[in-house]
Amino acid sequence: MRYHKIRRMDIANGEGIRVSIFMQGCAFHCKNCFNPETWDFDGGLEFTDDTIQEVLDLCDRSEVAGLSILGGEPMHPQNIEGTTKLAKAFKERFPNKNIWVWTGFLMDRDLKGKEVLNYLDVLVDGQFVEELHNPLLKWKGSSNQRVIDVKESLKKNKIILYVEDEVAV
Image (cartoon, rainbow, N blue to C red; front, side):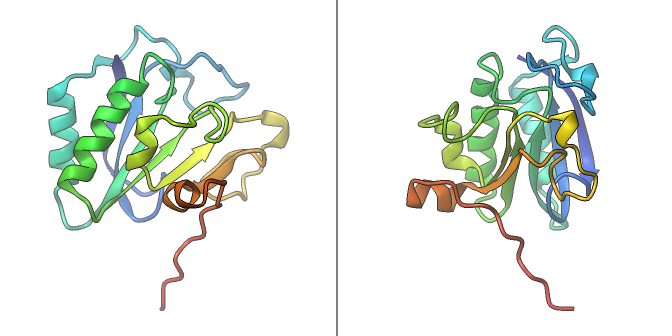
């Protein structure tokens, strides 16, 4: 498995200040993908236990709200094992921080029963569709995609959409 890059301070991919890792390799090749340089499974850098340790160490700052895992495609069969290992290690070390993941796969069809779901808080699922693109959407690029509250969805055995916490000003 490989990854493309790690962002130490990301405010665009999930709520709050985050550490983001972009996995390498995607078979979807969505038209006008925002990250086509991540498509090649042989590109990027080797994903190792040292990579996981680097990500965890970057997350070990009070200002970091959580971890975002994007791609490429973190849930592709070539990547899901590493994604699961990273998510599990993150939750063991930071049980009060959250994990957001973006995937073209559907939670209730393609990812049903996958171990990785046990560690996720928010999943943005569904492939990006250029014809449904709307720049006003939050956390997703096209209207077919869903922002899912994974914990509630697993509890209720149905898709529960994520609702942002309201912050008092």
